[in-house]
Length: 132
Image (cartoon, rainbow, N blue to C red; front, side, top):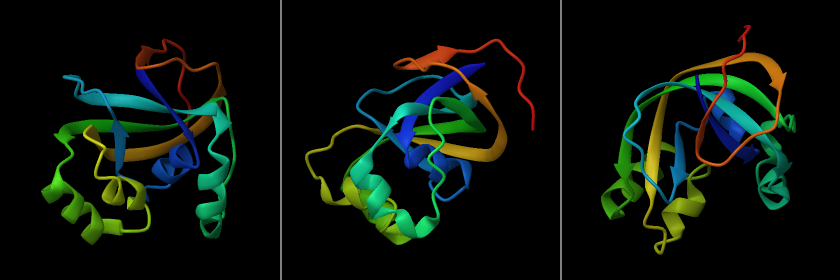
């Protein structure tokens, strides 16, 4: 199964179903199920910013499964939609008008039992067992 490595707290926010879009400077034609991997390093500034969400800083593990259902070019109209959906979670993308990347729309998010493994850049493959 394909895996996407994401820094904490963003991986945790996705695993909780709070964050439904993940942002990248690159796009993919892949649609389907992926695993969410929390990278070994967290974003300390973001951890402080989102501390009210009772974050779990589990790092270096696959923690959730989701479906990439769409990849959307981030433009001003999309930023307006993000602001309506959740201005707090998407604040950085909403305010950073220089970001010209893509939003991976994530659906069917499920937590799984952590699988401790090193991550990689891009979408990478994991062939092991997944348990819920």
